[in-house]
Length: 351
Ligand code: DAH
Image (cartoon, rainbow, N blue to C red):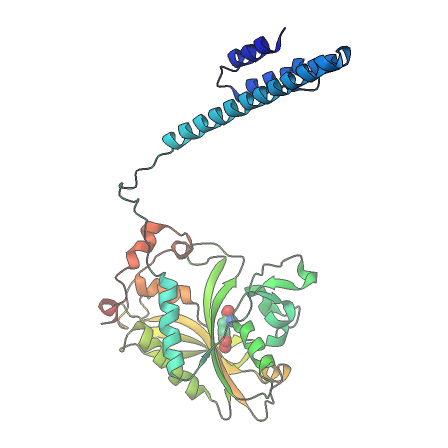
């Protein structure tokens, strides 16, 4: 076949929009065993004169063939791109989709309100880690291994009980960090908000919940100071008419220990379904820091005393906003969360 008709043949055959086919045809002519490549092997049969002439033509053909394939490839690719662009065309004049907006979470509201109060009283906000050692979560809080009070805090261990790492069951562990970190063992006032974890799950208990620990260390700190502080706390959160009472209790890290009740903010002490007709609602545990705890964390119990308290924030948020199941707080359901948009003013409940 002469070179001219080869060129014509190629131009006819590449009349396709299939890129793969183009590549195959290209190989048929220009590949290692392609028909144009084979032609150059014929050169050696020719005379010098003929070689010159034929070589020139052959080179021209190679270049022309290459150009044809290349142009066709570009043409197909451009067509594909145009098609894609056309199908992906967006109408920028369309109104955007509405994003669903929640509102500040009720737990954050309660936490921020309390932080504001305590910062105004000269406290620092201190956050400890959520992954804890057994030593910090229990031992340094006067709860040696085997202590029966450990049973009331059903713990998530990260590996097994022997490995001694766990998710903190109480923000009281932040007390330990704060005391150990205080190099000169100076007096301090801190509140420690944060997540805590226990193996619990029902309408009033969640495996994850929030606490708001308080710790004051100084000279001559007494139960009276604790009571005055908690009274302020309760009035701020639940309304000015709120009163508090202490009942004797037991916590390993405090001595004496108290359970704190507030007057029911629904019936103001008369008795109703919320307070189970008693007029009082139990809200937190507190006490005077046990000398062992001070000593174990570097403070001299002869010189210093302190008080500590540890309410759960979930309970307060539930009271405050009338939430009946703790699991709503962690369900991330927008229908629930949207309701708190206008709940900054809770005077309805307070009055
Ligand atoms: N950590 C206790 C708990 O989770 C609550 C508590 C009680 C904290 C008494 C305190 C305290 O700081 O003094 O049950």
